[in-house]
Image 1 (cartoon, protein in one colour):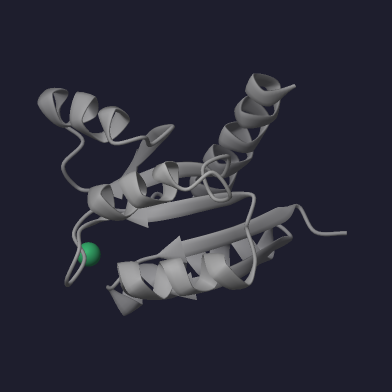
Image 2 (image 1 turned 90 degrees about the horizontal axis):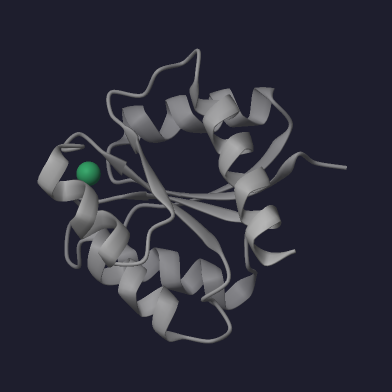
Length: 129
Ligand code: MN
């Protein structure tokens, strides 16, 4: 049994590999997407428990993709956590307003990423229980 299914949406290959490594080490099953279009294609195949969504992506940005996920009844229940280097006061409202459940600041903290993901998974389950 895995710790959970995570879809990482991130166009920076270094960040992507780091997040994948840290989450697989903790027992998560990881799938990856480098663009919003790839993210939506992955969701059409299978729904993860949680999405880590980079905000700055080529093409549609992470907030636009998040709004699309929330607008579709099938994908709407998935927990979405933004990955952002711009975790500033004003952006918090924008991120939550787009439908994200929270955000994890970049650069990724290797000591904390998996624990943060676990915390969001627990929160999500509590909310929908
Ligand atoms: Mn990016």
